[in-house]
Length: 78
Image (cartoon, rainbow, N blue to C red; front, side, top):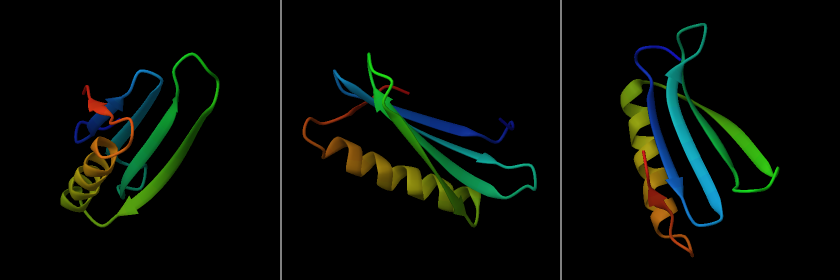
């Protein structure tokens, strides 16, 4: 990851979700979302292109709001 990267992670007792804001090899800003179950091999990922670092941080804030309103609620750990 580049020096400009930003990472956030949320967890429940059974699951985890992580969002990473970074630049790709071409210098474009992306938000990589990775999620999975603790103790299982089930996982997934999604990459979102964003226009700027600020847009990426805003997307991660939206993700945060979604995670904390899930049932059971995710707790931010990073």
